[in-house]
Image (cartoon, rainbow, N blue to C red; front, top):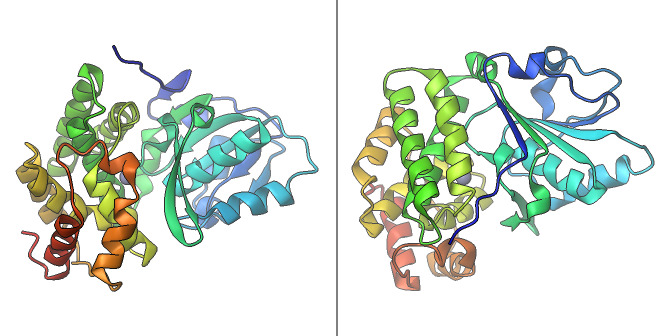
Length: 314
Ligand SMILES: [Zn+2]
């Protein structure tokens, strides 16, 4: 037996966000570049209120700031537009305000628009919150946004989708549907990256979200958060943490994933904090580790972090 969950409406296609009539008097939650990149004009929202200061790797404090700042107003809905950080904040705010959620990704990798997960920092440490009330009411996936994305943004988000789909495929909490979606996702992403076909990256990212969102990511994500706590971006950390995790797990995706990381030419990363302290913190992340196909000890984690720090990943 298994259960599948996803937003009640998913709209996919080039210009779909431009063609959709979003509710007037919405509260828009996004990051600093939304206006200068022309996103707000593009989606054509009328009478909107805006919070446009979502930071990358956002914290629960940002959610509290928004709730405090906008508490006295009545909004028809919350519109989250941007990368995974903006969507994670938007869905958590909407959940707290009990408002409808419209989520529009402008980068393609987090899958946040179709998952029940919001990742936020609490006391400086990344935590993932899981709740059915975090699902979007409407997710609008518009490949138009990838056309103006920088190579840096595309590679960081695409490798996240690659990590999510392959870790999701291997997850012990998976089922026939998640395996199907995750494998399809990775095939599309790999083709999109190698053959420079952005439409396939957008669709692959959506499939990855639907796949891993109905199971979980695993060791690669668990290892990545300590790097993010030191300011490394999510995708950049995963390029290395998921590679070593796939090798450790003997994942069937190890070689293909590693080739994509090499193709993107990520700079190596280094964890500054004491590695056994990091291992203790990582061990608390049971949501990811309990679903990992292999048991992971503290010694294993220190070994994997050492491989990354010594640039011995490949
Ligand atoms: Zn991720």
